Image (cartoon, rainbow, N blue to C red; front, side, top):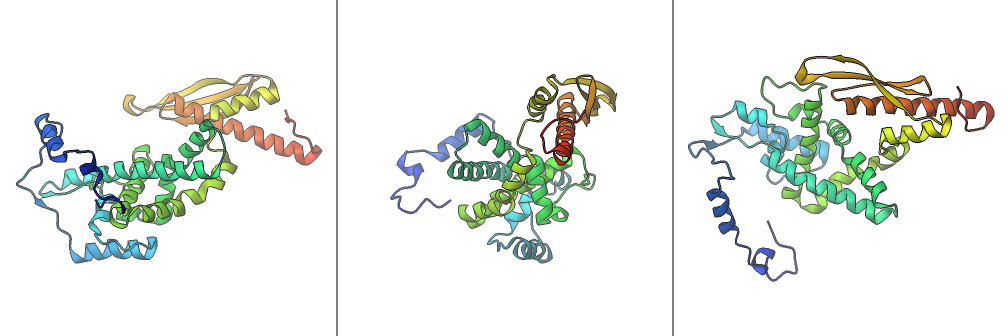
Length: 293
């Protein structure tokens, strides 16, 4: 990786950091998994290279110098496990890099443009970079059909697949950074994530649902929400919980999730919608912000 302009020496030289020595110690400590030296690097057909290159250029406005970075960014570990005859790379290292860049760019944007307390900006950042947000960006860009998975791993609506799609966005960010530089990666994040900032604020998805519902319940009904499990189903490794949230003896929302916490959050979100709907209805009728019971 090139050092920044203006440095006479790279940071490694400046601070006498011996990478070769560190790598040697890593190998001695058996931290790094030994690669199978008998495997040949994965090769790509011209059609494959052209498919990914053309997509990046036409849909993302990016001309990769090394399009294999983009291919790797869209390669899930399950694909690697199914193709053991070649040294196939998966996207987890690029995801690691892209995740850090995404957090930096979003944090920098928030710090530069808003004077809110740390807690509020942390909540905004979490809403912008959460799985649902960056997964939606992946669908918006449209590379879902290019993600390389094992034959047995089909993209669906499960939490696992949502995570796979979100991870690809981070990996693609990492690939763009390595191939095009920081400014290109920053532009990519602005185009697909930062532009959604107003939607995040208006939807109030950045708020913790349970805390926000408690505020509304206390304000309008002088009561604290109670959560009750009404159903548990599915095998032990994939339980599905259904939870009702009750305020002042009345059900205000129902949510489902693969953990009680997830179901409670979903129920709280429904409760928030209830209060907003009732409040808006009353406002139209009377011009006052009071709860319709």
